[in-house]
Amino acid sequence: MESVKNAVKEVTGASIGCAVVMIVLGLLAVILPHALGIAVSVVFAWLIVFSGVVYLAFAFTSLSAGRLIWRLMIGAVYILGGGYLAFHPGIALESLTVVLAVVFALEAMLELTSFFMFRLVPGSGWVLFDALVTLLLAGLILYPWPSSSTWAIGIILGVNLIFSGVTVLLYSVAARKTMEVLNP
Image 1: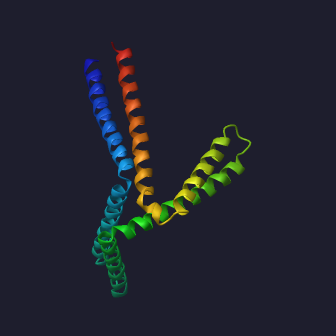
Image 2 (image 1 turned 45 degrees about the vertical axis):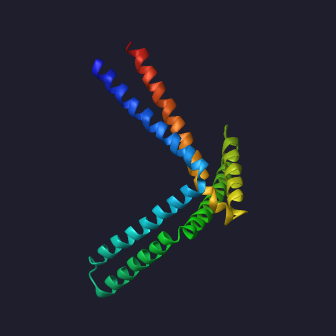
Image 3 (image 1 turned 30 degrees about the vertical axis):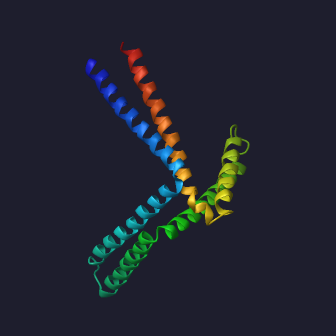
């Protein structure tokens, strides 16, 4: 039983450490949203380049010359487009920001539809609340776009990291305390 207690203590300790790192990174993202937005857009751009390289490699599995050429062209487009975005991160950041706003707007519309389908179910008001907040976020991002590109992704990711970190921290502390109560 002592080994289980030690294992739980070790795992929750690592989890608490990760939670603290998440909270610190979230705070940094909120303090420096533009820098994080640029970093995210550069990583995204390089993922596109890497996908293009994989697509080029995949092209050589083609059974016909037409498919080979088509896949080579698609891979080249990925590499060229991703490379362009990697070396022009401001454009990538603006693009990601507008995509995020559109995703929020679509999510809000789907949530509104869901609310109207289930409005008689207890607690459905929270779905409406979520839809309205999500729609407000979409508007806050889209209305001043492209200037919102300097803060939107960084702030949203930062707040998400902070809330996730706090959740992991509280859950880990509760798990550790529960184990201590069950096995003094």
